[in-house]
Image (cartoon, rainbow, N blue to C red; front, side, top):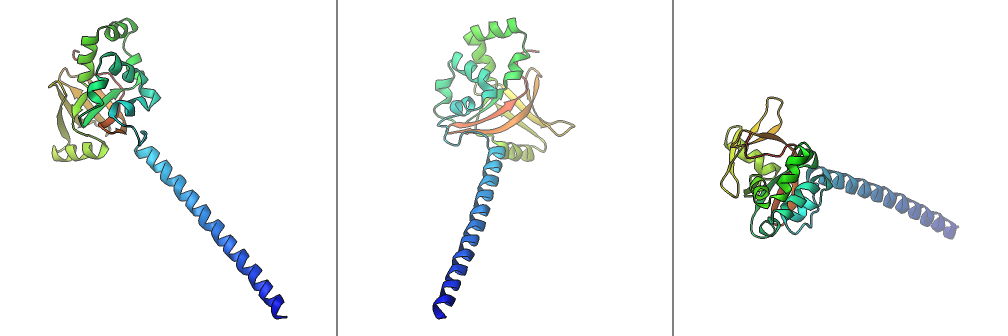
Length: 196
């Protein structure tokens, strides 16, 4: 009788432990999925991007900006030193430029480099850094590009983050925190050309 009781208790204990382990595994899987989703939302870049150029390359929506950076020869500059923040126009922003004008720009490395340098600032302005700069400036922040141009961050009436260059051209920030070893990439919906 004692052997039967022990067997029943042993089977019960195994079933209990098995159910408890499945429950813990289910919570861990759910928590991991939630953490991954949160990480993807707040920091969509490859965590192991060695530099800001690789971070830019990691998002297919910014392939035109990546190709422009390489064409202009800025990739070697941005891959070392820093930190840098690239306010990169997305593919739609580049496609909004008339085809003949974009083609001419992509063939003129000097002009292309000038346009691109107007999108790169020294310092790391991830989303938290932007919020800090805006708080310090009471809703506005002035940034200096790597070639001395001025960019102004501000909030629009509909509470969107806007970046404006010295020529008065504005774009909205539509993506945050593609992080690489030498800085961060934030996405724009418009190419900030140096003239109106």
